[in-house]
Length: 128
Image 1 (tube, rainbow, N blue to C red):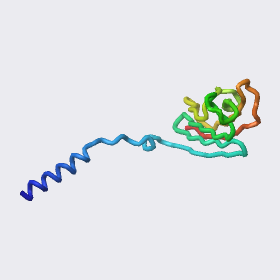
Image 2 (image 1 turned 120 degrees about the vertical axis):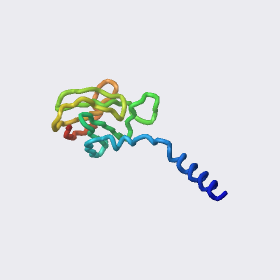
Image 3 (image 1 turned 90 degrees about the horizontal axis):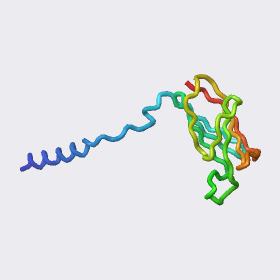
Image 4 (image 1 turned 60 degrees about the horizontal axis):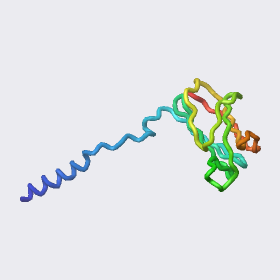
């Protein structure tokens, strides 16, 4: 009887461990550079993973969504090495397929008519 209880307990323990948990995304990243830059009006956080860069902006008083009435409506213009790369109507975005090397990124916040709001941030990142 004791053996049967022990076997049942062991079976329950091992069956609970049989589930395969998903691999965390952080383990898949090879080389990652993280930096946070803050100015008086904007905080920019970026992560470099391979040849992509993930950029996130925090801007008090600026809203990227017209449905959010809590701030002035704006969008982000992204310049890579001095050339306009794209404009984004979100506070976070991904830039893919960058060439290897050090790149200069400039984020300028503008209104819906592309008039500068006087908010910008410049940073460099090494893309591998």
